Length: 174
Image (cartoon, rainbow, N blue to C red; front, side):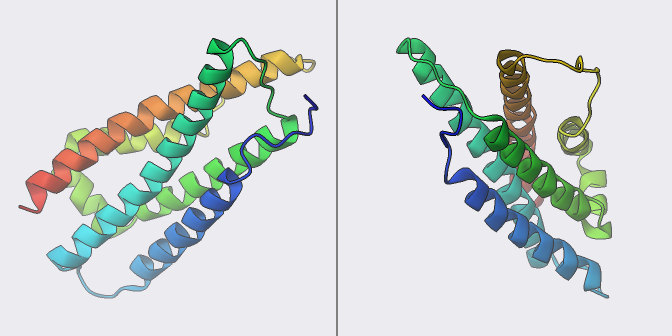
């Protein structure tokens, strides 16, 4: 298999679409001059959840494809360019989700749900944090393993966050 193979051709498009959506939500909410109604707040929280779900499902898809290849004793190598594209798009979407979280309305909602706030901030901050230095020369296999570890971490954080979001939505918007 060539290193130029594209294993996940649909993922950049999905991330771009959700990025555009999240960016619009963040801009709209920042331009509001009034306090959100319960209906508007529910829509905002649900829109935020959609962004988190997109990232979660994409990471699940990547992890599943690698796992199936491994179980079938097939090699699967995602190219550096494709890893970088996916990584950059996840980071961009996460940054837009951060902009939503930083709005007054979401801040107030998160303030009422401290467990949700903890999960939201852990997820949103963990994705962009490099807590170790990679050696200058890293093998392609090591780089791919780092990417997979990052994807698995994101699945864990987003899974936790989605659980708390569901709980908060159910409890808050009875």
